[in-house]
Image 1 (cartoon, rainbow, N blue to C red):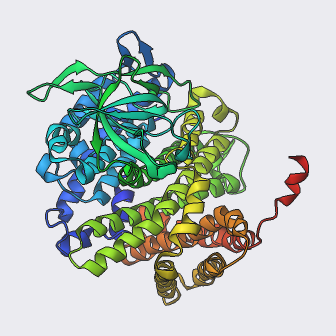
Image 2 (cartoon, helix red, strand yellow):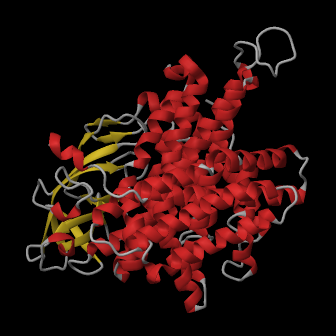
Length: 588
């Protein structure tokens, strides 16, 4: 169950895949010097390893509970959160004018990975607060920003996202929560929300809910949704929590995993109406909420990376200790450690290779988001925004799928003991499962990719990305050490290009594209992941190919190119095969 923050691996990916140092050298984040980046990563790693990780098992075992005074978190969580927010971690990438440090989102992404590896149930809470900061900074009135942002940036207060209702999950057009205007400019909110992460807790003295609801004259569908800020306690004249608002947690969900994270049923307006304040414009709340959701999708992708990293670490440690059978590789007496068995090594390398690929793709997305906000040239800012839009569904879906796959392999390596709760491998498997569901299911991410993101600028955005992948493959082909990997990696990019052309071509049956969306996203991710792992291998070989960590990076690239890249061609065939599930109509 121990976790050691992989600071060196994270720093390597930040530098050699996402090019974090270029953000500083190009003047986008002049304060983010290499020394500062390294210091922050080291300190974040220590906090994740020493303060959060030891609480993970207790959070899973005890969980959060609803008592008369509200939700109570697991033992030690209040103190850990107080130390975490007191250390300034919540405001790492927050706006400077409200007390944040204004550092790159890319650096914050690396820290988010570590918080969530240490405890996914702990790490998801700050994700919602950071998202609320972004939404309010972009869309709230000056008065709301003045009242709430500094406390949210510091983490003194936390934020939530209230979208889902019993009848309205992914389809927000079915949303029924309602809002009424008041003469003083405020609104009264009525309705029920479900699956609200950290909707109530005892970590902070106030909670700021962002709630989607409809006004009486709202048009039908998603165009009629407005966004409201609804605090748990209404701030008094000094800005401190004052009168209790009409917003309460009526129950906690009993979940498969992330037990330490309270998932609440929230009820607004049972005692006359919860007081809320409009964020953005009336009937345009979904656009405001998507400001929060897009970065939340990156953060959930990072949860997939995080749980994969922790599952890999635990499986590796177990494989070194557990003795069973005698491998042909074992030259000593007695049973060999199972890590000596070729199939165990195959599974471990698969875990590592997929984790490295997902991490790199997520970091590339974070870097694109940073550039989309901070590039001074309008065209470069637009290009970065388009790159971020393209990579968002890929990073979210692929990384969370990888979290599930790697956690499952971790259970397999533990054998029967993986199925027993005491080893902790089962918790990783349980915790990982939600990430492919919340913040937009992975099927929705795939549909978003093929219907909205591929057509950006007539397909030029994805074509430019594919061209960059080919540049990386060319560098591999020109390298004597790695030239043998170029054909396999290149074929995965060929498969991506063919499948992309199919997705972009006009067709009479939209269901053909929708049916192939999920395998297409995987093809995209396999090709992009190949570029990630081989970039790391090229850099490792240039630095010192004999150093153990660099040897592992090189071996990981060989494994990926020979074992994972070939999967792209078969998946591309699935992606372009069209809608083939019509036979199900006979049983409907």
